[in-house]
Image (tube, rainbow, N blue to C red; front, side, top):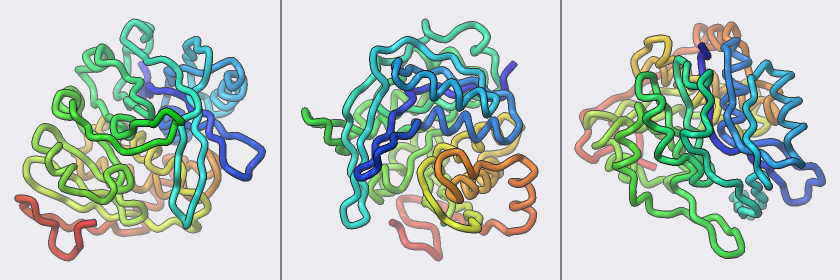
Length: 300
């Protein structure tokens, strides 16, 4: 049995002004974070022929069991920064992933991260993992793209249907453009966690909001992948029997290492994560919420 299975497209990330592309995608980063923690991990993904060997080499290096589905292309994003703000363009998209693509060994796991980056998780996947913690990285559900591939935020029209089929949904403050009321609305159906960068995360469930403080990184080099590492830590914490807030605290600690290097270079072992948790307190502020922000903080 696996400790964690991650499902979603691998991405080819291209950065303006940089000649070299990177392997990306939430499923890939989440699998890497879990593998570095020492857990048995499988990655189910689609990847094209030009990126397949690099992904396979990375998985061998980290000890991830790779199940790479055939695809003519790899989902490809170009990144451009204007005045410090990130602009994305979708240049290619692999086809979706349905339940028929999940081999029997990958159905035996303690937890799963469903990692959507481009609407690729088909509805048939959700019932396969109904008996274990299901963490949905919902970024892909909040994206649409123009004819030229320019990424824009979309209204999540089927949110209630999707949310009801997972244990918890994770979005970033950036994904919702600071509109916490969106997450509050979704949390009426199922728990939602909003990651708020180095400040930690806000847990919304049952009409309440709890802010679980983050852990200071030694140095911030690259924030790419921190939210993906968070999803892995959250799923593993829940699989270990932690309640949602305790699992969020563990996830914050896992994510705090991800920013200390480029790619997977800085991802931490479980011992390093536990040491950081022991060495730093994680503040927590809660309130009974009927649409207001927790005391002591301003709604983004």
